Length: 110
Image 1: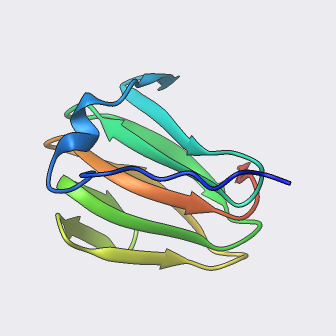
Image 2: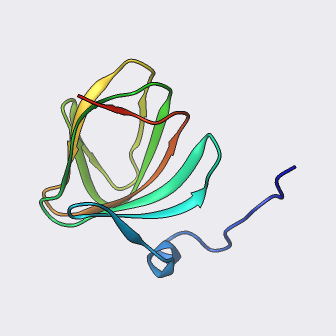
């Protein structure tokens, strides 16, 4: 059995003090929960991107700071985005951003 885990005072910006590590070029990750579904913070440097990929389960994104863009639009801080199983997109941030992301299963890069 896995023990509960909590993060006090995550908002409005204590997430910035958590430990991040390299994920992709220009994108850092802070794993909050692993073992499916996974939950993490992703921090994009200005101009960073993630290549086109397909979701194999639901992905949920809450934009905490900045603006994240994908093929369907741009999403400022406070936006909540759902990417269901089977959807495809690429992701980028012109100005940089930090998002809280939850995914059921790993994505497939295409």
